[in-house]
Length: 124
Image 1 (tube, rainbow, N blue to C red):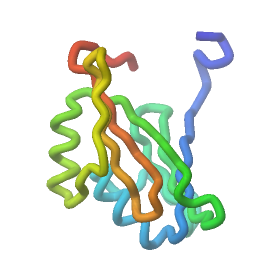
Image 2 (image 1 turned 135 degrees about the vertical axis):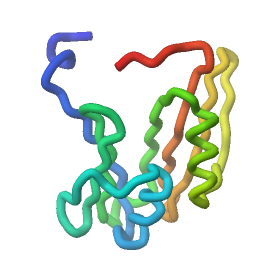
Image 3 (image 1 turned 90 degrees about the vertical axis):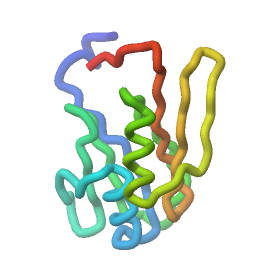
Image 4 (image 1 turned 180 degrees about the horizontal axis):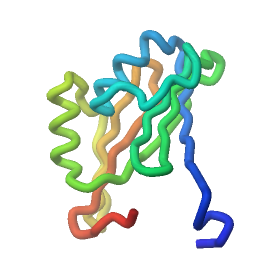
């Protein structure tokens, strides 16, 4: 990793939606919590890990084109918890090396995937 990326970097991964008020409850359920903060009335921000943020913003002209993936430990437990909150996966992908990705689609068609590798530890 370059020095530029090593320290002092915060990642904000954005998802544009048509209607923030309609999308917000879906993301609360997907992520299991309300946002960490509201940037303004049409933008919510969740800290998904230290220095890593998921941003949901009302920008109708760009809605439906996002693809974000969060690689997590204990993928099965996370997917089960999301299902308990009423959201079902839209698709699942399994790769030859054992990596699995479970995809969820918000009401606008944006994809949020959760991936995991049962044989690997994640790096902070």
